[in-house]
Image 1 (cartoon, helix red, strand yellow):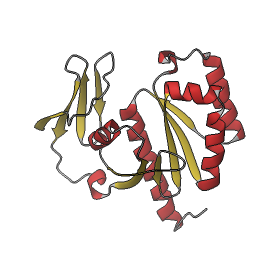
Image 2 (cartoon, helix red, strand yellow):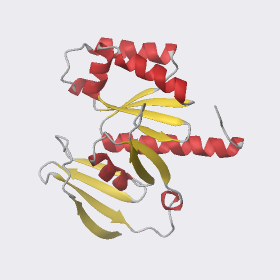
Image 3 (cartoon, one colour):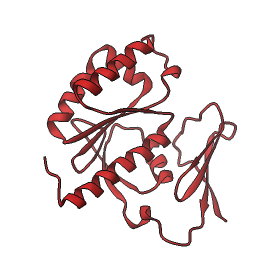
Image 4 (cartoon, one colour):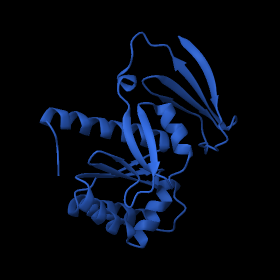
Length: 196
């Protein structure tokens, strides 16, 4: 049953996809319409308190990340952002560090070899690191060939053992990020701590 209808604006522009999309999460259904140029959230009435409400992940976010990510994170739920300037990485929770890249930024960081140096620095500081990329390779505007992108990803997976995951948009990225942090938190509790 639908409980309420809210239009998210808050003065922050959220880029709309070219087609309609529906994101289903535990607490809401997010309908994105390019015509409305806004995000509409249908909150679903729940009979019990969800796990997301019982525990919110406390995440440190680099203050250079787009402000629109805060709004998207509230829609996805289960996360509290604390912004500060980070020397490496974009999202940190415990000993887990995530670098967020848009697809064109990934292409640029491959061409100037910045990606490799970022990974080396992240591995020296954190036990678990991930590269999450928002946007399809096919939708890139960079001139780099897709085989170069995939080749670099393969090299990093084999040489550095670092997962690089490409998703459609920032909603998917945030949901995936939240689940990564939650899984590491669960494993840490099961092992009684997981220090580097």
